[in-house]
Length: 269
Ligand code: NAD
Image 1: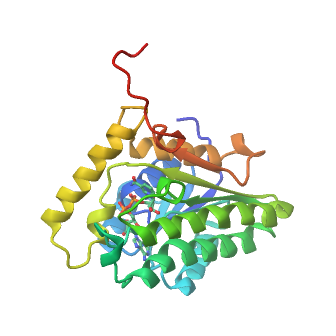
Image 2 (image 1 turned 30 degrees about the horizontal axis):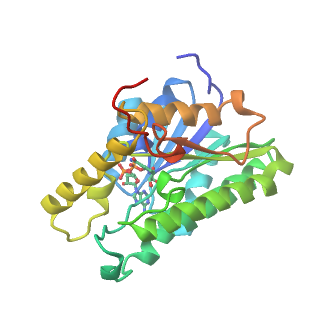
């Protein structure tokens, strides 16, 4: 570790577990002060206790955009500033084998967390950053927002919205030296599908998820499994001063999935 984020204050929404936890750990290891905002009180408090005074946990439900504003205020008040905002909290929504069976019952919730909270987090962080020399905003989209496909139609639509919003915000906020970029992970093993399941048969869901993962692995050019650390590395690049000339980009961290399907050959040459 090089202390790349020394002197910086960051917020990670959804920072208590999964990719967000990986980001929090990496940012803290690089010297940042990190505010962890999450709906999961136990996991968030445990992570902050593990990492010590350099981090602070705030319980927040980002589907309520008023709470997103409170999170930004809490970071500024507690740590004295804000340089990096990671809008990471997200849910996959209910999986459907057939779109014909989708009653869109979770549309409002998925859009509130995956889109409205990202827009509010960007706006609220930018209100501070615009008056304090700029900053870096990092939004989590997905290869599901780049590639068309089935299964989670609302999720795909929400993540596509994040891409267009990120580019538009990058143009709008460049005037204030605020950079806005997005990371599009692909198939990193976390609890996102299980956590998003409300009242579903978990065993069947896990079998369905494993089938999809196996298909994604087969379609992926790089056979290596992606990790939470791969995403944290990309976030570190966007958060720090190595990317001062980079804004409005969407970076897939997906083993080449969004580049296209593998070409099947009998021998590798
Ligand atoms: P995860 O479920 O493991 O973690 C998400 C975190 O967000 C959890 O700690 C959860 O408690 C929190 N959260 C959920 N709803 C919240 C709310 N309303 N308010 C505050 N916190 C809330 O998921 P993950 O895989 O770590 O996903 C993180 C982000 O990355 C999401 O935006 C997701 O869409 C995106 N993503 C993940 C993958 C992947 O392969 N894991 C792929 C593409 C995109």
